[in-house]
Length: 118
Image (cartoon, rainbow, N blue to C red):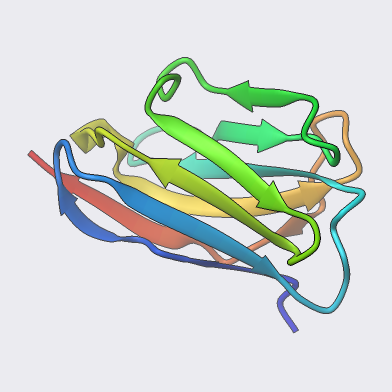
């Protein structure tokens, strides 16, 4: 059983929005840090956004600040990435991840493809 499952990817045009969801199953991640990563063509895997278990600490990569927003609902064991004003360089496979904190993630989803056309 895959503990984290992403959904919501797709093909959109530049300037459009997408909402990615991450659903956890089999265990609760309410005490875990959770984050979104992406792997884009020709680049290393990049952490896009993350949020601590309580939501007190939030991180955004400079490339997405002001455009992406991360949410989590510990009661529902879900996490969301709202992506606005998408750019072609946002194209990639997006993964959700969970971990104990300290920027260490030991649970990963299988990824969802986001493609932004110009």
